[in-house]
Amino acid sequence: MNRAQKSEAVEQLQQTFGDSEIVVVCHYKGLTVSQLTEFRSKLRAEGGSFKVTKNRLAKIALAGTRYEGLTEYFTGPTGIATSKDPVVAAKVAQNFSKDNENLIILGGALGDKPLDQAGVEQLSKLPSLDELRGKLVGLIQAPATKIAGVLQAPAGQLARIMGAQGAKTE
Image 1 (spheres, rainbow, N blue to C red):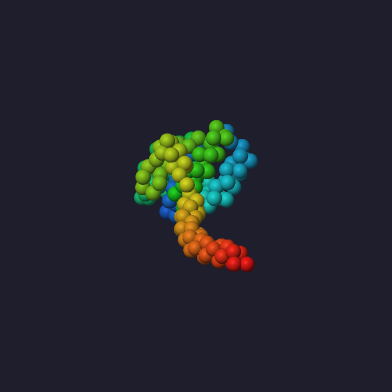
Image 2: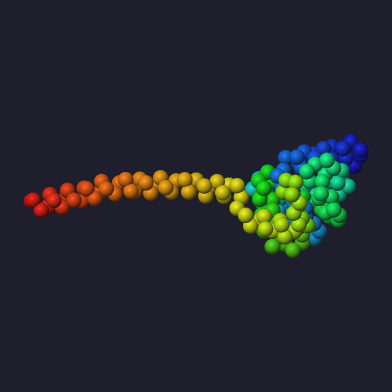
């Protein structure tokens, strides 16, 4: 890799760090190519990404970003899982590491807040933004359906009373 390629790689990493709400740093030693591909596709399906990084270039790219505190994690075979949704990268990485012990979560950062391995695990248990939006829509729609049911109930009762009264007179 020549100097121009290295500077381009650093710029891409800086852009990745700038666009991401969360960064999860993992060791991937022992994972097969197919397992890494599976991990990447799971992250991609949820709106995240995984990138194998050169430690030296990653440390250079971290300088001056809100993730600067992550430099200690970049030793050995390191990759970063990132996403714009603050929960997706942590959730997918945590779930994948349960099935594959070779993916080891070292830590990460949510915005400018550093997370250790336990912090990433706790964050992975939270619902994603899409799940929260779905719950919110459900909560908003539930009262409307209840109001419609309550408003229809007196009309139904009135119809039953009229029907019973009509049956008596006949």
